[in-house]
Amino acid sequence: MTALNRVPSLMARAGTASALTLAAVSGSIVVPGAAADASAATMATKAMQVAASKKGAPYKWGATGPRRFDCSGLTLYSFKRVGKRLPRTAAQQYNTTHHIAARNRRAGDLVFFHSGSSVYHVGIYAGHNKIWHAPKTGDVVKLQKIWTRSVWYGRVG
Image (cartoon, rainbow, N blue to C red; front, side, top):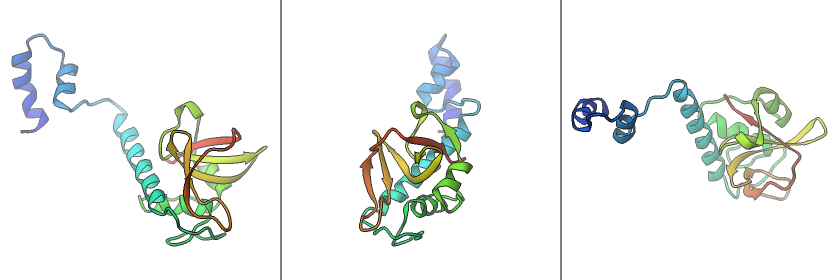
């Protein structure tokens, strides 16, 4: 039985309960505009999971995967795997994302490290002030705490 088929019988049993309460009970709330946000969040979360699956892959400057990555190569690869195109460099990626405040960041958003107005590094936000990223030569893709306040956030649309 689908959620829509359950609503009439639930309404008959509920008497004065609101339709929103019934929708919440049946597990099918429809909120205008939320579908696009939900699908974007799902896409970004999946991209973050792709990056996480590359844990331990060696850093290589200019590499875009699937076995070696630099920072923007990892983000490009991760989003490409979920059907989203990003430009090649961290600065170009920053310029094509929807810029968001730190308080609005979500898992799967991009974290851009900057010095003044120059973006020099990018990772994928994993929650709890941590990112998945390919740090530098001699290192590997890993989950790491954000180490500076000089970051901007961007959401891939």
